[in-house]
Amino acid sequence: MRRYKLILLFTAAVLAMSACTDEESDLGIDLTDSTTLYHGIADTLYADNAWTEFDDSLTTSNLSFGIIGNYHDATFGHVSSILYTQLALPSNANDIAFDSMVIDSVVLSFAKTQLFPDTSATYHFRFEVKQLSEQLLSDTTYYAFDQLPVDENTTFFNDIVPVTYYDTVVSFKLDTSINRVIRRSATAEDFLAETKGLRIRILNSSDEGMVTVDLTSANTCLRAHYHYVYDGDTIGGTYTFLLGTGTSHFSHFEHDYSSTIFASGNPFPGTFRLYLEPLAGHRVRLSFDNAVQAFHAAHPWAVIHHAELLLPVAPESVGTELPDQLLTLGKVGESWYYIDDLINIYDLSGYDGTYHSDRAAYCIRLAQHLQGLLRLGNDPGIRLQINASRHAAQRVILNGLSSTDRPRIAIVYSE
Image 1 (cartoon, helix red, strand yellow):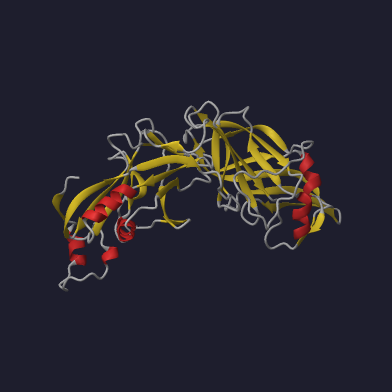
Image 2 (image 1 turned 135 degrees about the vertical axis):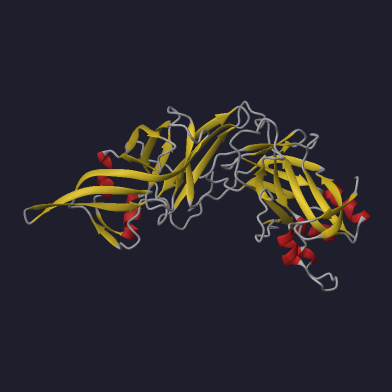
């Protein structure tokens, strides 16, 4: 490795804030950061092992966002996402007496936040809504591979709904067969048990694409418009049933990797490419063990001032709709923990797992983590995954170990 002396300077404002006349000490070594004035030596540690593995054990219960739809490409094959949700009374309602009402219409709505793959397109999605034949339970944790059976004899909705970039809320009127489900007298608990829940999906027969749903929004709900006659007068109203927040819900993700490079098995070696796919698809493992051991042997007293994990994006992914952020996890024993080296005082765009377009790479700060690895004397490994992997469909391909522009940690240290 070639080393050279560096003098890193920040702006005058930061120098003024960080100016100090105290004598040097080892206090705060773990907090040393690249925004500090120092003399250092630059070096680079290259990953010595990497692979792609399935990420199929995600919990998807009660998340703030969900995603519905279907998508496929030649690299990752086909993926579909289905939303399962309870149908509940408002949070302030202990019971309902709705059996005497005349229901005029029932409208299902959800707040739309994102479209994929073309965020500015108009899609014509064929939504299907069915009642579950088995109750969605409030005290159960559901995973991405879980499914619940439906009543195949009843369909509350099956039709094309246009969804555009400009839409903030998507709504459609359900079949009158939904009336028998909600027209009842029951306690809140009994209502959950009797209605069982809904399965909402987009059928493959429509436009291919995926829509992200804000499950915390008040616009994600089921509204029943009704009327009744009292003392000769017709009185109308609207009753809002909960979907999403205030209910238990989960997403089911399903992948078909036939005719793709992943069809032969798992894990997939990272010699040429590394693959990050959301929705219980793929994650990446990296190891810098050889590099860490060699550096530690040569520099046992090194103090890491700056360490930046660089993950160059493969040419075929540059210019596509990329994930907003990648997460790094470190390993202690058999447990994984999130690596968080962020210092929020400064705006360090591109250093917090976001894509840095000038470098065509994701950049992640690892100074404190790397200092810990040097104390340990080895690297148990790093795991990479997409931050919004449960509700966004963006994926990315990274360069592998044989690439000239390959995964590495750029460091500045002193000793």
